[in-house]
Length: 133
Image (tube, rainbow, N blue to C red; front, side):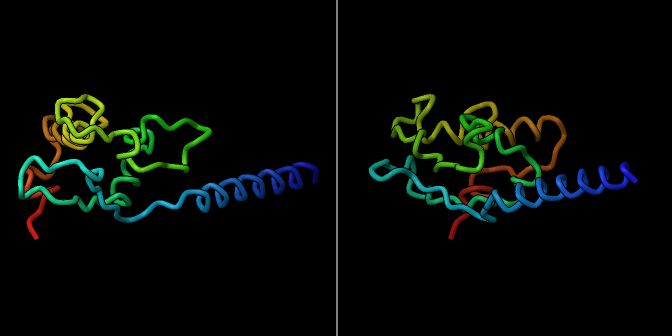
Protein backbone atom coordinates (compact mmCIF):
# COMPACT_ATOMS: atom_id res chain seq x y z
CA UNK A 1 0.00 0.00 0.00
CA UNK A 2 2.78 2.40 0.98
CA UNK A 3 4.56 1.68 -2.32
CA UNK A 4 1.43 2.55 -4.31
CA UNK A 5 1.04 5.85 -2.47
CA UNK A 6 4.73 6.65 -2.88
CA UNK A 7 4.60 5.78 -6.58
CA UNK A 8 1.50 7.96 -7.09
CA UNK A 9 3.15 10.92 -5.36
CA UNK A 10 6.35 10.48 -7.37
CA UNK A 11 4.40 10.20 -10.64
CA UNK A 12 2.38 13.30 -9.79
CA UNK A 13 5.51 15.29 -9.00
CA UNK A 14 7.19 14.14 -12.22
CA UNK A 15 4.13 15.16 -14.24
CA UNK A 16 4.03 18.56 -12.54
CA UNK A 17 7.69 19.16 -13.40
CA UNK A 18 7.15 18.15 -17.04
CA UNK A 19 4.09 20.38 -17.45
CA UNK A 20 5.77 23.32 -15.70
CA UNK A 21 8.85 23.00 -17.90
CA UNK A 22 6.79 22.79 -21.08
CA UNK A 23 4.80 25.89 -20.14
CA UNK A 24 7.88 27.85 -18.97
CA UNK A 25 9.53 27.98 -22.39
CA UNK A 26 7.75 29.94 -25.08
CA UNK A 27 9.63 28.87 -28.16
CA UNK A 28 8.71 30.93 -31.22
CA UNK A 29 8.23 28.94 -34.42
CA UNK A 30 9.97 31.59 -36.52
CA UNK A 31 12.11 34.57 -35.66
CA UNK A 32 13.38 37.34 -37.89
CA UNK A 33 17.08 38.12 -37.64
CA UNK A 34 17.66 41.78 -38.42
CA UNK A 35 20.88 43.76 -38.41
CA UNK A 36 21.24 46.15 -35.49
CA UNK A 37 20.17 49.67 -36.42
CA UNK A 38 22.99 51.51 -38.12
CA UNK A 39 24.75 48.37 -39.36
CA UNK A 40 25.18 48.45 -43.11
CA UNK A 41 24.53 45.33 -45.22
CA UNK A 42 27.61 43.89 -46.91
CA UNK A 43 25.67 43.54 -50.19
CA UNK A 44 22.41 44.97 -51.54
CA UNK A 45 20.80 41.52 -51.78
CA UNK A 46 21.31 40.84 -48.05
CA UNK A 47 17.98 41.29 -46.26
CA UNK A 48 16.54 40.14 -42.95
CA UNK A 49 16.62 36.38 -42.36
CA UNK A 50 13.53 34.40 -41.42
CA UNK A 51 14.88 31.71 -39.15
CA UNK A 52 12.92 28.50 -38.51
CA UNK A 53 13.53 28.63 -34.76
CA UNK A 54 10.97 25.99 -33.79
CA UNK A 55 12.39 23.51 -36.33
CA UNK A 56 15.89 23.98 -34.89
CA UNK A 57 14.73 24.09 -31.24
CA UNK A 58 13.47 20.50 -31.34
CA UNK A 59 16.70 19.25 -32.94
CA UNK A 60 19.45 21.29 -31.27
CA UNK A 61 19.92 21.93 -27.53
CA UNK A 62 19.12 25.56 -26.65
CA UNK A 63 22.57 26.24 -25.24
CA UNK A 64 24.22 25.31 -28.55
CA UNK A 65 23.10 28.69 -29.94
CA UNK A 66 22.26 30.53 -26.74
CA UNK A 67 25.79 29.86 -25.57
CA UNK A 68 25.92 32.57 -22.90
CA UNK A 69 22.79 31.35 -21.15
CA UNK A 70 23.04 29.51 -17.86
CA UNK A 71 20.71 27.16 -16.04
CA UNK A 72 19.48 30.20 -14.11
CA UNK A 73 18.71 32.30 -17.22
CA UNK A 74 17.68 29.62 -19.71
CA UNK A 75 14.26 30.53 -21.03
CA UNK A 76 14.85 34.27 -20.59
CA UNK A 77 16.56 34.60 -23.96
CA UNK A 78 17.70 37.91 -25.31
CA UNK A 79 17.98 38.91 -28.94
CA UNK A 80 21.26 37.76 -30.50
CA UNK A 81 22.05 41.29 -31.61
CA UNK A 82 22.02 42.44 -27.97
CA UNK A 83 25.47 40.86 -27.58
CA UNK A 84 26.47 40.57 -31.24
CA UNK A 85 26.05 44.15 -32.41
CA UNK A 86 29.40 45.34 -33.84
CA UNK A 87 29.18 46.39 -37.49
CA UNK A 88 32.69 45.25 -38.51
CA UNK A 89 32.41 41.84 -40.24
CA UNK A 90 35.92 40.96 -39.00
CA UNK A 91 34.96 41.48 -35.34
CA UNK A 92 34.78 37.93 -33.89
CA UNK A 93 31.87 38.85 -31.60
CA UNK A 94 30.14 41.10 -34.14
CA UNK A 95 26.76 40.61 -35.75
CA UNK A 96 28.10 39.14 -39.01
CA UNK A 97 30.40 36.64 -37.27
CA UNK A 98 27.57 35.40 -35.04
CA UNK A 99 26.08 33.80 -38.17
CA UNK A 100 29.13 33.26 -40.39
CA UNK A 101 31.99 31.95 -38.22
CA UNK A 102 33.64 28.65 -39.11
CA UNK A 103 32.36 26.67 -36.11
CA UNK A 104 29.29 26.36 -33.95
CA UNK A 105 27.35 28.15 -32.59
CA UNK A 106 27.36 30.09 -35.88
CA UNK A 107 24.66 29.02 -38.36
CA UNK A 108 27.12 28.72 -41.23
CA UNK A 109 29.62 26.86 -39.04
CA UNK A 110 27.05 24.34 -37.82
CA UNK A 111 25.66 23.70 -41.31
CA UNK A 112 29.17 23.35 -42.77
CA UNK A 113 30.12 20.80 -40.10
CA UNK A 114 26.92 18.81 -40.67
CA UNK A 115 27.33 18.88 -44.43
CA UNK A 116 30.94 17.67 -44.07
CA UNK A 117 29.67 14.79 -41.94
CA UNK A 118 27.31 13.74 -44.73
CA UNK A 119 24.19 15.58 -43.60
CA UNK A 120 21.66 17.12 -45.97
CA UNK A 121 21.81 20.86 -45.34
CA UNK A 122 20.88 23.92 -47.35
CA UNK A 123 23.75 25.30 -49.36
CA UNK A 124 24.35 28.73 -50.80
CA UNK A 125 23.49 32.09 -49.33
CA UNK A 126 20.42 32.72 -51.50
CA UNK A 127 19.03 29.16 -51.31
CA UNK A 128 19.02 28.93 -47.54
CA UNK A 129 19.13 32.03 -45.36
CA UNK A 130 18.97 34.93 -47.79
CA UNK A 131 16.21 33.79 -50.13
CA UNK A 132 15.19 36.52 -52.61
CA UNK A 133 11.78 38.11 -52.16
